[in-house]
Length: 156
Image (cartoon, rainbow, N blue to C red; front, side):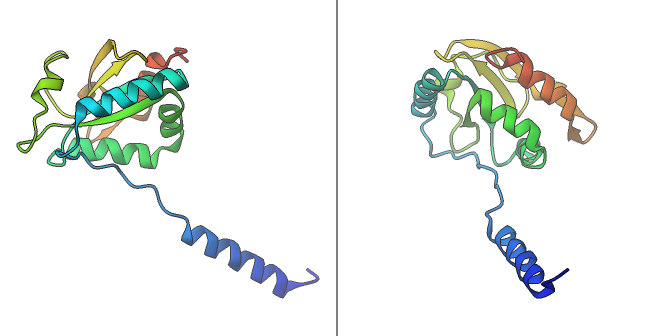
């Protein structure tokens, strides 16, 4: 090594940059959001980007909703497939806002979180009980990746 100080400064600089990069955080379920407007905006985006839409229905009270969000933060490969193929809309379901009018257009939900897959025009393609994507006390990476690939616009 001809310039150990230069190497040290370079490594230190890269470390400092890594520390200043914002860590991805989960988007909370917000009872104040207008789910109908959010879905309409998602349809516009999905048409423009040729993606499908996932309605992620849940609430801040729901531990499995938070676990699913954390799953995507921890599993970047799954998050990349999600981002590449889908526009995600968080639809709040809580005491503060049950989003009854919006959710009345979809099949009954028996547990949370619940995922609805829509085509780019907003037509329902699939209703997903996320309990089927779990294994023990966590979401199963293989099951989630299979779900994402199956329902992506290309089916891959």
